[in-house]
Structure formats: C-alpha cells, structure tokens
Amino acid sequence: MDLQQFFNAFKSSLQNNDFVKITLSKPISKSDELVNVYIRQIELKEEVLFQILYRYNTNDKVKNYSLNDAVIELENLLKEKFRAGILFTLENDLLVFISKKKKISYKTTKPSFKNKLPVTHDKIKEKRIELSKYLYYLGITDNKNNLIPKMSDKYRQINKYLEIIDSLLEAVDVSKEINIVDMGSGKGYLTFALYDYLINIKKYKVKVTGIELRQNLVNYCNDIAKKSGFINLNFVAERIENYNDDKINILIALHACDTATDDAIYKGLVAKSDLIICAPCCHKQIRQQVKGKEQEIPLLKYGIFKERQFEMVTDTIRALILEKKGYNTKIFEFISNEHTRKNIMLVGSKSNKIKDVELINKKITGLKEIYKIENHYLETLV
Image (tube, rainbow, N blue to C red):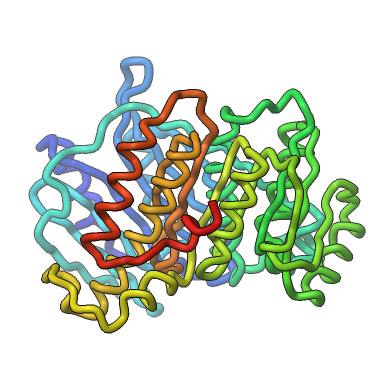
C-alpha cells in the first residue's frame, strides 16, 4: 500500500501552518465498533500534540500523540481499520480511498474550512448511559451485553436525551423525591434510561410513571421494570387528558401527537411542575383550522413551507402560553434531523420572575391575526 502521498501532504500542511484536521471513515469490518477517527492538533502544557478521538458505537476515547507517533497510528488505522480518509487543510481537502483489493486512489477538492480549529484540549463527553440489564430486555444489547449495531443510533439518542435532562435539573430541588411523569412513553426506551440514570448514577430519590394508551406496551414495560428491579418505575394505560396527578415535578411528553402535547403541557401547568419538557409532533390543529383561508404571506403559497411555518407558529404560541404562566422557555434541536424532522424540543422551567402578561397576550393575538388563527388548543385548556 502506498499511503505516502497522504502522509507527505499531512506533514506539508503542518509546515505551511494550514492543517485543520483528519477524518477517517468507512470501517473495513462492519462488526468493528470503531466507526470514525478524528485527528486534530492541540497544545497541552505548551507542547504541540495530536489528539486522536476514537468514536465507538457506545462512547468516545481520546489519546494524545507526538507527531511521529500520530503518523504511525494513522498508518495503522488506514491499513487495518478504515477505507477512507480526508485531510482537511486551508488550501484544499485531500481524500484517500482504499479498495477491498488494497488499491489506493486520491481526490483533491476545494477546502471545507476557512479557519483552523482551536488548539484547546477537549474533554471527553460524560457517558450517562451504562450497558445495564434493561437495555438487553429492550433489544438494544445482546445477551453478552454488547450493543446491537442497528441500535447504535437509539443508544446515541438516549445518551443525548440524558445530557439534555441533566442540564435542566438545576430548576428542580433534587434533595427531595422527584416525581416524574412521562406522557406518551411508548416502548419506554427513554423512560427506562432516565430512571436508571437518576437512580443508579445520580443517586437521586425518584419516582417515574409512564403514561401510555396501548395496554400491550404498558404490560411489556411493567414486565421489564420488574425484571430490572426498577421498583419506583411504573407504567399506566390511560389517555393523557384523563390522567390526574397534582404532584408532578417533571412533566415529559416526547412526540405526543398533535393536541396530546397540549394536554400534557396543561397537566404540567395544573401541577405547577418545575420542568415541562416536550418534543411536539403532528401539528394538525392549527393547519386544519386555517385550511381554505387565503394567506397573505408569500411563504405560505408553498405547501411544504406552509406546513413548517404552522409547526413553528403552533410551538411558539405554546412557549408564549408557558411564559404567561410563569415559565422561562427555550426551543432547540433535540436530535439530529438525519433521524427525524420531528426533532424540536420545547422546555419550560418554573420561574419566580414576574411576567408581563399583557405584552405576552399581545404577541399571541398578533400571531393569530397574522396567520388567521381562531384559537390554539392549549389556550382553550388554560
């Protein structure tokens, strides 16, 4: 194998001070849990080193190398682990491809980066999900506690979810028992992970209830909770609007369809929950209400834009209603949209700050007038 052109270009980019990073992809073995490698230059204790991040299905590992050792490791990885690599520089990108028969080809393209990466030392992200027994029962790991490859995206999603929840817990008094209700819990992937994380890793006192309409899923989840020894995790078969609990510290509703999200938010408002966390889905109520009405906004001439615009309007009014009821709100991307376009998370955290209700009402009224909306379902509840 002749990879010398790649190594020479790497060293030349260092001499020219235009090296950005190296990315390795396309693992030779599909069963190998190492899916990507990223190489960047860093400064650590006034020493120039090369940080190599090994991205596995379940976690990341980082090692720092001298230049010579980094080149040796890079050569080993390209010979034994990967079929493709990209050297990013400020001048151009150099792509190397290695066929199954070890034939090497190169391609040069325009540079992807206009600036170099910072040379600060990155810390590894905290892993919040352990390979616990419940993951086997949910079909995420096999009987040898290895992650099933096709479930790696779900595993990453769970870890991202826990990262988000962890960042929001400052709004909750964790010194007392935390009562969490997950409305529309489905098969329970995220519900189980949250319980395990808060109980076994964070060591909090927690009670979690999953609300799910389908009795078969409730039975399935309760069986797994029992086998996993999760004594304070329980699932109930009930419609969201019929569930009553006035002691909810954290209300969660992920992908509850259409106005079921509003029903869940309302339950959180009634219980004066510290946190209300939603990932809205199937925004039909507003769209159906304005169907047939001529819209003056040019954006709404096109169907796909109309759909997205009314999704944004629906969630904005939800956020404004939460603010009116004394919550600080934020809306952000939950997971990468390569998995689903329904990836927006709306969070309300209880606040003691006095809200300008009159101003908020004007904002809601203004949106309704612009888009010719008669009412928002959550308004009719509160």
